[in-house]
Structure formats: C-alpha cells, structure tokens
Length: 238
Ligand SMILES: NC(=O)c1ccc[n+]([C@@H]2O[C@H](COP(=O)([O-])OP(=O)(O)OC[C@H]3O[C@@H](n4cnc5c(N)ncnc54)[C@H](OP(=O)(O)O)[C@@H]3O)[C@@H](O)[C@H]2O)c1
Image (cartoon, rainbow, N blue to C red; front, side, top):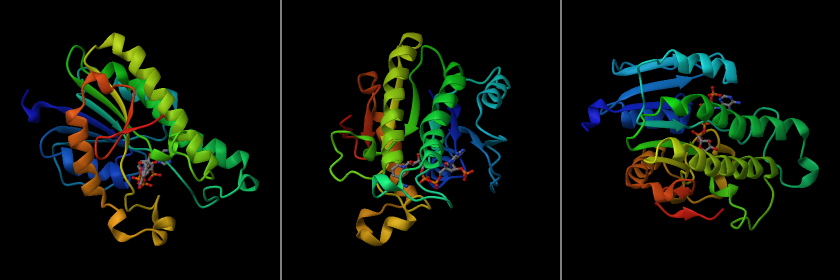
C-alpha cells in the first residue's frame, strides 16, 4: 500500500518522543495526534484531537468518533518518571503510595485503556502495529542496581500488558504486531535530571531515537509480537 494512505494514531503527541513521532510520520501518512494539551502545528495532514483526560469513558467516546477511520499503527508515547512532587526512589524509604499510584496510572493504566478502546480501530486482516513506549528498566533480568521502584514496576507491568494484548488481539488479527519499545536514553524532560551522569554520546535526540524506532517498527513480524525491543532492534529480556 502507498505510505500516503497509511493512518497513524499517536497518543501523547505533545511529549518529546510523541512530537518526534508526529514529525516523522506526518509527511508520509495521515496522522491523528491525541494529546491532553494543545501544541503548535502547521500541517494540514494532521488531525489534532485534544482530550480532557485519558479515562476509559473519554477514550471510548473519542474512539467512537472515528467510525470510518481504521489505523495502520497506534503508537502510545505516554509515560512519567518524576513530577513536581517526586523523583524516582533511590531506596525503599522514598517509596510512597502517591508516587506508586501516579506512576502506575501514567505508565500502565493509561496505555492499557488506550489499547482497550482503540484496538478495534486498527485495520483488520492487514499488517498493523500497536506500539507502547516501554523502557529497559522494566526488565526484571536486567535489573542490576535496584531503586526506581515505581517506574520499574510500572514498565514491567506494561510489558505484561503488551504480552497479554499480543495473545488476545492476535486472535482478532493474525497480522497484528503488539510491541513495547525501549527508545534509548533520549534528551527530554523525563531524563533531564539524570543527564549529568551520562556521556553526551549516550543521550539521543528524540529525532534520532524515532528514526531508529520507526525502522524497528517496520521490520517487525508477528513472531516479535508481545516482546519488548530496543532502538537497535534487540529484544529486551523480560
Ligand atoms: N526519554 C527517555 O530517555 C526514555 C527512556 C525510556 C523510556 N521512555 C518512555 O518513552 C515515553 C515518552 O517519554 P518522553 O521522553 O517523550 O517524555 P516526555 O517528554 O515527558 O513526554 C511524556 C508524555 O506523557 C504524557 N503524560 C505523562 N503522564 C501523563 C498522565 N498521567 N496522563 C496523561 N499524559 C501523561 C505527557 O503529557 P503532558 O505533557 O500533557 O503531561 C507527555 O505527552 C514514556 O513512556 C517514557 O517512559 C523514555
């Protein structure tokens, strides 16, 4: 199919990786950009959808407005590591109910609700991709340093959702690939407080990361469905 006929839904389109996804896909595809907050765009090929929140009912209503639109890709770029009230935990004494609940909401609950409400808007019987921005720190086998309790747990949980969706939705569309992606360490507000400990060469621009991730997305087959894959195309162990 002509790339120009492809339809791509991006959630968290105002975030750093979300807006780089938007810039990457909008020249070749019809992009549906979902966001909580408004952002600038001059592109007429872009459908901007501002949502009050990412609650189940709001998402169901949003999905129902696209009666005749079916997507080739749904890409969920939402996530949070810290906010004005908390930083990732260094030790268990830092762990709080508020941080855990907020982090699980942003990184696990909201992406799951989006997929729940939008999987039927993916094309049936055609190669389609449901993409979740995950993180290597969600890997249990790769956890060598501990800490970051809430973020690690939320991304491990997200990876379980990815696996579950791959099984159930794979019955609905045998050509569907459901995937979690690790984007590398990307220069964004999410990583900003931790960048001083890293060499510059280890920090990617969002454009570079998205270039890599988009070629990973295009190279995936259904055999990869349910996995977490990094920006180089390598599997991240569960
Ligand atoms: N940057 C990295 O190095 C890195 C590494 C590994 C994984 N990731 C993952 O990649 C994804 C994107 O990260 P990023 O670097 O682009 O971060 P970012 O610039 O901070 O963008 C995060 C996005 O998530 C949205 N968001 C966060 N919490 C939300 C909530 N509770 N409800 C609704 N929307 C919420 C934000 O929307 P608002 O702006 O409206 O709040 C924003 O669109 C995240 O899932 C992150 O965990 C990033």
